[in-house]
Image 1 (tube, rainbow, N blue to C red):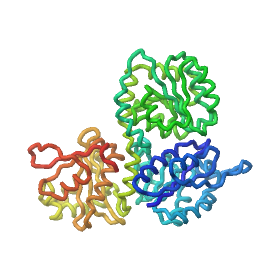
Image 2 (cartoon, one colour):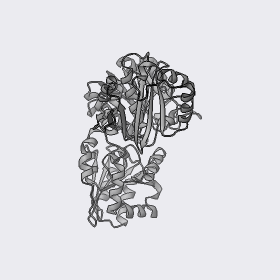
Image 3 (cartoon, rainbow, N blue to C red):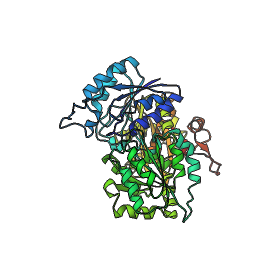
Image 4 (cartoon, one colour):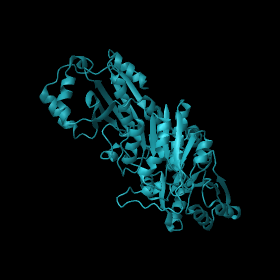
Length: 521
């Protein structure tokens, strides 16, 4: 299949959008697909780097330094990042879109919305994956990916069409393979020893246009630290020379690495980090690296605050580097017991397999079906299905249910936070019922059946969608299932979806469990 990725990097935008798209592109390339990037020739673009990774990168014309794009009053919050209007950007992209004729478009840009997307899809008839985490504009995507922790489909309910599939949460974080590969070694070494000098990693993204790195180094010097410091900077960072000059005479051991290709290894070596609160947050979580998160852009503030709330990082505003707040954070994070607790919490948020999950989702998704919450209007249909002979024979209780009993039960479940009832449908036609019941904490039990008239293969499609929903929207750690031994189709489906059969417990049922980290979808 053929993919076109539209994303930009610049001194203003940073490098994160290109880098996470590259992570997905590499997985897709390994699966045999062709990928082409389209980026604008901003100052600090990464077109050469994209090409070095083996992907063609088309550079749209550079915006003239003498041209100042002033977005209209009702423009998107980040409209200036594009450097031109969406209409002009599409006009410049169009010849390349038509020439390549992609099967998929991937758009990762805060300055593009449904206006650009609609024109791109009309020109190519391609499927569209949008990567977003601001939920501040409308999209016409087939799939929307939001890799931030705590985000869900509910954040986009008024911004997308009903047919759009949402992949939400850090299980879909687009990290390079190296982070999953180094994860085990990193977690094993996180047993800090009291009194020993620590290794601090500082990385404020690929650009750090305001040179917060130098301010941090000078502040650490004032605290007379005796630790080893490693600074990682991107090749387009404008203040590399100034940082290197300070590092050469710093009162502590300090090395500066530019455009390193083994970031996961350096994170593994570090005891804790000071980093930007962008997409690298999930890299550090994957490796269990405690962090003081520096907010260097408004869209990073919520991530930092959320991670501080769950105890995996501290949130620091850029104007607080020389404050008592930073001093207090330093004193706390350097305590071995605090480091260990933060590390253990961080590692639960991201496992580094997100790019594989997204790629697998793209390959296995036919887009004809979707799941949605059941509504009151579905009650009669579900009652009819449940009492059908072909469905009743695979239930624990095979008797027909009276309408009054069903009606009372249905009403009760609508307000039950531990019971989720879903409908699977294709082309607006309901074809199946799914439910999740919370057993304890993040363990959910599921149940499902296809409608009596559902076509062959419905169970597999709705099962995959339902499990993706459970592990992202419900934040389930595990899903359990219980099957009657004569329900051969359900037994095979559980095995096909990756469930592991559990030991028998004497109740006559087959018991299955599926962990979130083993479901690569």
